[in-house]
Image (cartoon, rainbow, N blue to C red; front, side, top):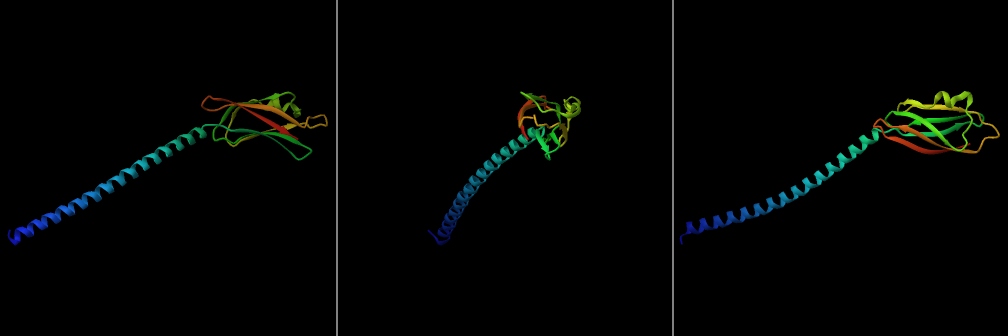
Length: 156
């Protein structure tokens, strides 16, 4: 074998080694890239689920009932903390209910449309014969047509 043939074989072997190393490295990079794409797809799915859950929450009203007062005058405060408008908001009492001033409850309830962030106050006539606490259930309808009932208790 002549020198140029030997030299040609060595160059060919070197090219095969370089190609093999390149192929192995490319395979490893491709595997990592596929792994990262799977993780990215998983994260995108979780993000989509969170967005859908947030959209559901944004379509719901969240009504809260509190007793507010300074010791001499008292109000029953009904507030919509949710992001959606509530409809047909009403209260039913479990047992005895507080005495409201000037037919407040008849004039202000039910609330046909109760926008987000709004508050409605009902004045209460507090007397010595009042119970220390009252229990009730507030009812409303969300924009999606779902009826909601939530129990509450107020304390003087």
